[in-house]
Length: 326
Image (cartoon, rainbow, N blue to C red; front, side, top):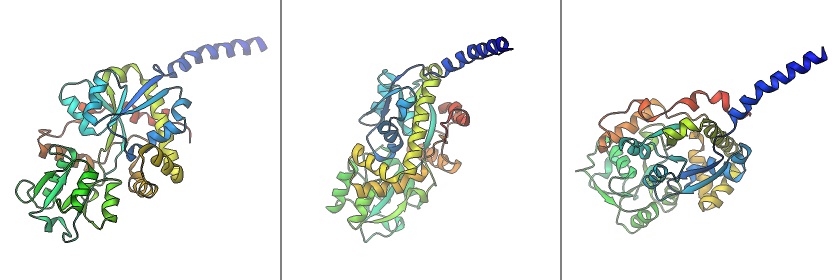
């Protein structure tokens, strides 16, 4: 009997060995590219700071670029394994016939708001005014044009859209009386409020959520490294969980990694944390519809893309199988 148990035990060990090997990351040194350093990447910073990636058997280096376009180029050149950026940024690469695919979402925050000088109390009263955007053709430009259209204003004839640079520069221009309305996210929208400017429209007034950041990689990398991707995502999920469970620690990380003042870090955290999802879901149908409408209006797309053109649902569909234990 003992001999039979020994044989069975040995047999089970042999059967288990391939499964264990299959779960091991195919690639253990991973570079994650970000378009910029900003607060909404908090779960990734948390995972890095707390050693969650190392717990999953991978060494991760997080690298920030000068915008999503440079980061996509870095991936195509082989300098980045996994990128996290806007869906708009990934779609530019896909439209240029680069072999890219989104494989996870979860950053579904709609965090942009429009702030105006005190005498303007609504978009309807902003006709003929000067609107600031980062640059013509940027996401802030497209969002602003779409917002104006939803409020019955023609962005080409009813207002003047001004290319004003980064949020800090545009806030200074607003204080100098050179811009009447500006689009801001965290933390500049809180700085604008503290300076006496008033919110006249929120992005959530247009749609409840938005594909703010998505995970993506080349098709070859996704196919060749599924265990590595699961390891990265398990680290991310742990980062989401800790960020939501420990606000004080999250604020510490934002102050350290992003350089935010503690007060603005806390207000920003409250602004976006509820729209971060560990299961990688894409935004609601309404949020995705708004995304495609903005792109069509801007001339980026002729029509909404079918999901299979840009999204590989494998890791979202199997989330319950690979997610870390609670």
